[in-house]
Length: 110
Image (cartoon, rainbow, N blue to C red; front, side):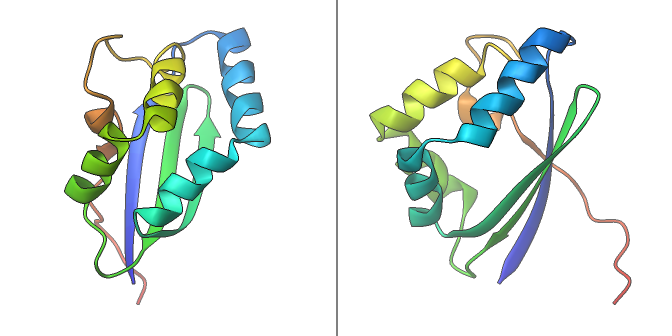
């Protein structure tokens, strides 16, 4: 199993952040299915002010390149990514596969 930590900033708007949180609380089964099919075993997203941190646990075979290709071929994921771009502090026409930035692990208690 592999583990990744990624980060992304939301637009600094309390109402938008509330809507973003609610959309994730409710979720969409087809998006959850696509995440699992890409090899993600577990995913958690944490919020502090406008900063998001995502923790992903994946299969050993998981790659971001494979997930990106699967996402580009999935109309449900493309629709979700378009919706999410409203909330994310990124250019609206930016590549959805590069919005979340991979963080470098600098400490491990093990």
